[in-house]
Image 1: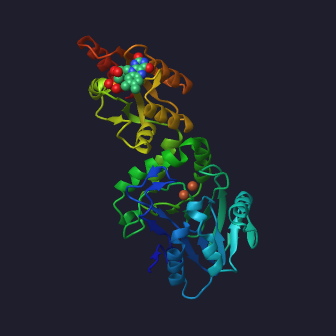
Image 2: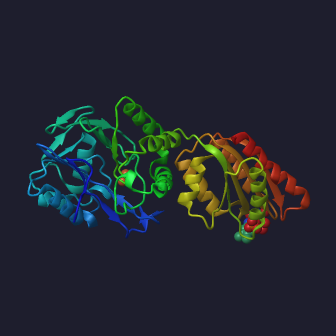
Image 3: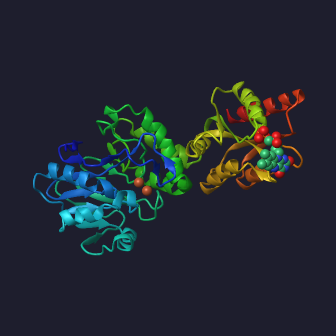
Length: 392
Ligand SMILES: Cc1cc2nc3c(=O)[nH]c(=O)nc-3n(C[C@H](O)[C@H](O)[C@H](O)COP(=O)(O)O)c2cc1C
Ligand SMILES: [Fe+2]
Ligand SMILES: [Fe+2]
């Protein structure tokens, strides 16, 4: 059971989860997910985070192999979410003398979740912990997923243990460092991870990125996905873009349709967009996975939503998308809407109300009773073109 060596003193001892279908029982994992854990071996031995319960023994075997009989002195806990802590009892059984290093908020949660309140070293923001020739400094990152989240910066090797930040879905197949992996899949999964897990907390992410600006970072050890060395600038850039709710040049068209009338409108709108930019993505809410729909909505600046009127309301799956965007406070979009009805239209009115609530720049809307007529084509085409023009 080999652990990956990241430097003379640093080991990767995390695990790959290829079994779980839905992260947080909601978000599909087509490429699986890794729960990362790291070991720093110096005068003291430090373990950074544990793993999900069903993988704890596997990680402990890797640790044992790397330690060659030595014991863990400190377990640094950066984040209490159970994907990283539910296995903690197994570690304490194997290494009963280890001291848990965490902040006050984490200590409360540790007690609440696991009744663990002994052998804790409670640290403050910016406190340093020498462990030999390596020194850790703790950087708090509240709400870069949960309120207790903190990061550790190791000064000698310039490693940032970043908790969930800069993490992504996708198992680590054969290697753990970005330079040894084809990163394309992880980058796509980073967008999806950020939007679905952290999306609401743009402001806290921005505050944390500010704290990191004046430190030299050579390695990022996140809790999910590759160890970043070669592509640090790229992944920090993605977090910066998304947390500022800054959209790229492109338009996402999200529509629901029972009998294809709304879909036909979406096709015409897309043609108008494509006149201006090739970056046009259509999502049928009944087919596309919602975690990917909202990811693309975060990624691109233009957002056009279409829905038939359904029992005096929006098509329910369209409503779900709106709920998820609102829950994550997606800001700064160029918006348009379209829809149809047969006797009393409500969908376009409701879509525009959403736009107003979210303070989007609403370019316009188009609505049809029953089916589109030839004369309507130009209206839908122009709607797409206009949004694309404003986005560029
Ligand atoms: C279950 C159901 C509920 C509907 N509710 C309404 C409604 O409340 N008001 C209305 O004007 N039309 C309503 N309609 C009619 C649709 O809005 C209309 O058929 C529309 O063209 C469907 O678009 P689509 O082909 O994209 O699914 C409803 C249709 C269905 C099947
Ligand atoms: Fe988390
Ligand atoms: Fe996590």
